[in-house]
Length: 213
Image (cartoon, rainbow, N blue to C red; front, side, top):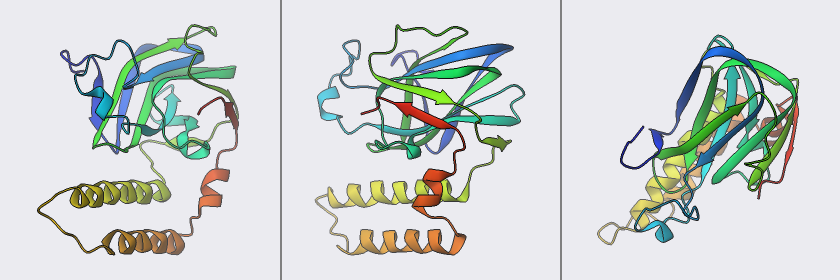
């Protein structure tokens, strides 16, 4: 946690894991991503950071070894989010650990969480922004397992950031086909590892619906 900025941050790809110090029967998780439109955001140049939006996964666990995947932005029509994210579970899920898996930030290498709340009963206080109704059964992962498909997406995102930074630098004139060649490599890696965008979107067994924009 950065005491001066008021948010918890890590570099993507990475994890932010919260230990509740006890196992609870959870019905709702709400957390706030950095949002330039938040009235409490006092960042001086926040109007210039409208593209600071995030891709992530939300997981929970009783033992920090077997994780339930509650939500994944890759399964949503809108792949990037900002502001409050609220997840209401159709049935209680027992958990001690809450994990936000930082996948990508379109602006830079940071991933920023401002607030997080966990409820044993559903709460309407944080329903004004992205609201997701999550139904099981949920996919499970062992340990820090991370599918190859998402490792490739991380790589693709970092390549995109690098090439955009190069293109905005007056003293650097990169090969205009560089970004295209990188994307061709990523597509090829997806092909040889047997992953596809259709398979990725269909891999979650449970159903998640929401008003994410």
